[in-house]
Structure formats: structure tokens, C-alpha cells
Length: 154
Image 1 (cartoon, rainbow, N blue to C red):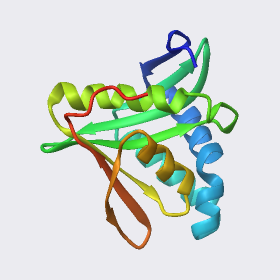
Image 2: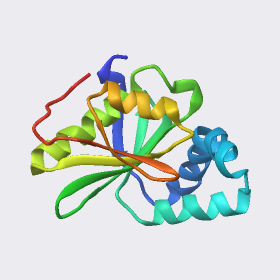
Image 3: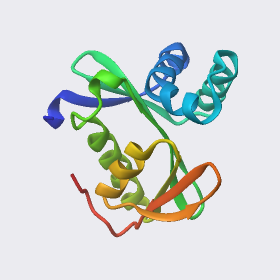
Image 4: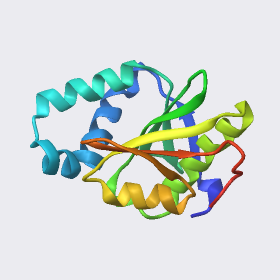
């Protein structure tokens, strides 16, 4: 995908509904497989995630197609969300967004870390293809990281 067509902007309060919608669209199958789907509970989780701040919208041309959230911690940058509408997945948009996160982590000289639910094997493979290493495995999640000395990848 041509990078010129993909842009990121900071989310504002009026983007909360889109965040919830893209969370549900991108992650519902994974959540259903692991826990079953409880719409009210997932809306609450997504609302809390949005309210935690540091969320950016992912745009293709003039259309919102996803979200990414980052937190800069004392010893790493945490990639807390990456949700892309299913019809735009596997088109380079996720790689573009992760490379943006890698650039931020490199700029501050910190590793980039994330976790993904174990049922989301596609996400695990995606991140590993971008150079992330499996750091930890819990009952529910894989925790992956990318060293701060890794430069822009894909």
C-alpha cells in the first residue's frame, strides 16, 4: 500500500463511537472464540481503552479505517491497540501503523512491546514477521517486543 494514502491523526472525544465500532469489527471473532461475546462488556472495555488516551485514527484517503494506541512508559513504549476494519486488513495499513509506532519507540530509545490474545494467531504472526520476538506467554496472551535498535521495517 502506498504510504502517501495512509495518515494518522489524534483521536478526539467524538471519535469514541468509531473506536468502539472498529474494536468490535476487528476483534469480535477472537473475543468470541476465547470468551463468548458480551456486547455490553465489550463496549465497556472499548470505552475504557479509548478513555485511557493516546489514541490515533488511521485514515485511508478521507476514510477512517482503524485506530492505534500507544503509551510511553518509563522503560518501553506500549502498543496498546491496533484495530483495523476487516476489509482493510492485509493491505499494508497495519504495517504502516506499526512502523509509525517503531519510529516513536526508536526516537525515545525504548523497546516497543505489546500483547495479543492467544486466539489471535494472525496478529502474532504479523508482529513476528515485523521482527517482534515472543517475550512471555500467559494463559490468555502472548507478549511480544521489538528492540529499540530496530529501524523501520516494512
